[in-house]
Length: 333
Image 1 (cartoon, rainbow, N blue to C red):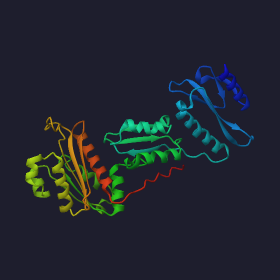
Image 2 (cartoon, rainbow, N blue to C red; image 1 turned 90 degrees about the vertical axis):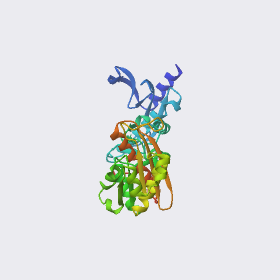
Image 3 (cartoon, rainbow, N blue to C red; image 1 turned 30 degrees about the horizontal axis):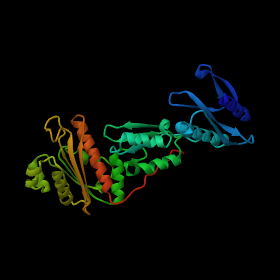
Image 4 (cartoon, helix red, strand yellow; image 1 turned 180 degrees about the vertical axis):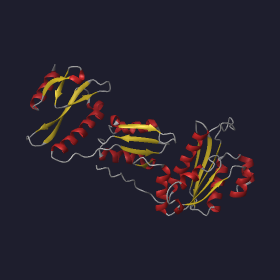
């Protein structure tokens, strides 16, 4: 047919030939070229460098038997692979290839994240992994070029908090220290977990001032000046009490930034209105800016506590007065 004749003409002009590919059970393939396959693994074209002057590969030829937009992810992957080959064939030393592991805040919708990767044509080059703490790790192949990585960074915005596999408390600690702010923490259901995570960072005395573990209502009133009327009217597990706890921690802890958590970690204590896993988190700074969050986490008691602490650290991160640009690790790119 017409496609077959055109294919053979292109193959001949490129100085390529058809041959048997043992990996494909004896299928014919274009020797010296990369196959383009669809989602079912069927051959739908090929990509090859054209040796225009016998010294440099300076032209990439792609032949598609399906609409090009359907094959975009595979075409981009072929282009990146062939560019790497061209770089090495020109006499440059082989570049060390490392996968990039990006850490993304868990409020990111998984479907949206998958769409972002697909829009950039790199779904086959990346893997998305949900983490136990509620965040997401994206493993990006070294073939995912800098231009595409920059575009993805822009789309993720502040949800991207690290470009290498670092714990959130370490990233946050570096930013708090650089901003020169002091933090106080008020905890009920997390029982000191947030304070423990922050103080596990070396040099935490530069940014951590004080932690309050106020489990009972009496402790909330005595240590953080939470109004008894607020506790009676709204209950200990509420936005209003979380806000009052954060304000009390900010002032009593002599801090620039404070976060408070109150909730029902389980396995008992829930109700229809506030089931087990319901957590209220409030963050406030000296300028009066606040961030409030209501979560309903699934899992056992430890899982609820861990995810609550992760969200609290993210709220602190978003209220730091300075903005920080992320730097990619130097992996010999």
